[in-house]
Image (cartoon, rainbow, N blue to C red):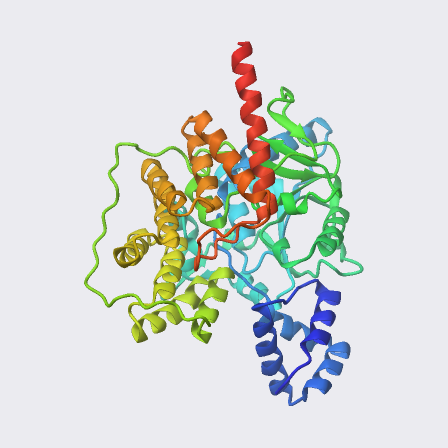
Length: 517
């Protein structure tokens, strides 16, 4: 069954903003074939059906959305909200004589981990008072995941980075799943939410705080502007909008002012909820404010709620410099085969799944590739990357070392070992591996970038400045050949260069202040 994807892509973008280009076209074609077959329609007839059948369009969208989430994702932002912003907003409300609860929306809530994380955080902070101080809502365009959210049942995969005491306090083990405490479930209402809708129901309006994290990456700039205006319309006059740490720059579109507090960022509709003693040095509202680049892989290293917030650098907090290099051993294995000029369908599929952060789906594909060819370099490196994201660091390091055993200059392997060490807060080891990557390929600007942030985090200011300058020089001419062949880091060039310039300016300002003192 063959589909004219262009017309379907246009229809979907117009109605809900989702983009399907490159590898994602394959997912669209598969979903269209599945739904057309389910209703017994030919491609042309199915296109016409989508125009007049809202229920069928919803079923198609349910197949197309990506629902990668887990509890307490990017915990530094949750801690900023709970420890700083909410207490100020409650105090301001008390001074104004209002007893109305703060209304909080998780837009693009997927299967509910984010709004439930906010509830658990508020209960830990405010106790039973949270029951009357806040109301919570979750909204998503995928009706299937909303049903899962309402059920409150989760597999172990949703608990990456969650301390055992939090899990024991709010969940009950029930066979293969973890059942959320009814007290938490009752505090969140879930609603279908299309952020490009012409109008929104009353229950999805008048919010004090909106979380819209790790969703905007699926939209182009113009669509993001429309969505941000719509989100602003759902907020109260003094509301705040929190966007994922790695997405903030891409959403600083002039719709709402951007606020920086100690390296963490949020947007405001009116006056920001700043502390009375706030100074320009500690808090800024400016177009040039930029987010620290903290990917989902790096965010969980901050811990959950009770772990201190990282101050906007470093990418990982300083580790124990006395720790030795992590040694790994592997059983003998066949010589790695050289990659073919044309990637196999399995390799293409595995890479796409890794880029979409669908780790559980990527692993079986990679295991099948390695079963057929144990020395497949691409599969080994991609599997190591997936395992790092699943926090299985020892296994990931073993795979990267296997590659290095037969390819002494694998930039991919050096980077993976550096990322694994950085995640585990072995900073000295991470620096060693990123240096190796930069030595093997000077144009590998991600290695220089990670080095700069690590140096900055441990107080090596001059080394950090030098590494940031190298990144800026390397990116000045566009996209240099980094030597990275297989690891899909997905770091945006424009944002990285901007971040380096921003950090250089901050380091220079700090140095000038130190000289004055």
